[in-house]
Image 1 (cartoon, helix red, strand yellow):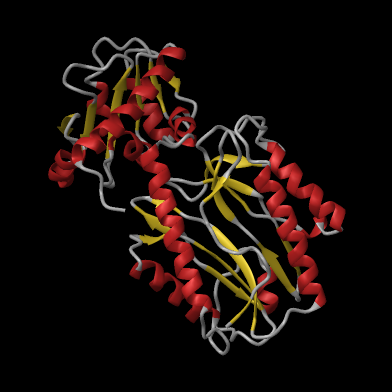
Image 2 (cartoon, rainbow, N blue to C red; image 1 turned 135 degrees about the horizontal axis):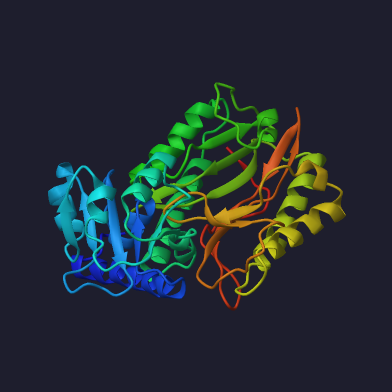
Length: 369
């Protein structure tokens, strides 16, 4: 999608920092020192490789304080025009020096190195507490810009796969097919791939995170493709499994049907307010009733956004609840060593009235190539 006008982008990032201010008030902190680059990007729009931002519970008249080094002076002025900017190589130290009036500072202890944290504690003249993944919790619920961008990434991805399915696939290696799919996504407008593309054929499809090899695709192979495009920093994630060249066998139909039913049960359970564990339980119940649960050995879903794997992580040990406007994946599978495997995965957005699936592709067992 085209880049948002500067004024619109400024408003979007200001609204995100406003949400963080509310969180700071709730945890009795005067300011947050955000050093994780993904979180800095989320709050400011800055995409460089070195930056930090100090967000106060009460917004300063001249804007929140942003620090980067001399390589990014022009970029920061373009991407963060509403922030008060300083140029330094000592990001944390110089931002601490601007904490006048701060009586309690929250920092990202979950990503900060031990050395940086120790240095910060030695220099800070106020109590330092953990932000407790506060920005990550905010990132679970996406705004309109994020959902639209993610939808673009998913649409671009599925168009690329449909073009690939038109063939030919027989006689090509997994590696060739993976590079072809990636090139199609880039040609359609992706800034890059969302993660290392998985193309797994025949017995290799039983390996959940198989890396493409020079194995040649043969007639009758299951062909599993796990892939996605990245657009403006947002990651699509989709998996489909097809049969190449000839009609599927009975065992291929059986495991595909079980995965398809389990995946849709999990998708339908993705409603706002539901326990995060509920979609996992729904999908696993279907696999158990079909007699295949012991052959499902991977995670069943995760949030997506500025990272390919982010909160919330769907599973039985997550005590949280699903929120409206939260993008997540649903990806059960069955993996039969030395024979083959099936995974079906969609990226969807949790909604009060049910999920919106962004990866609009057939889930039926198709014959292609």
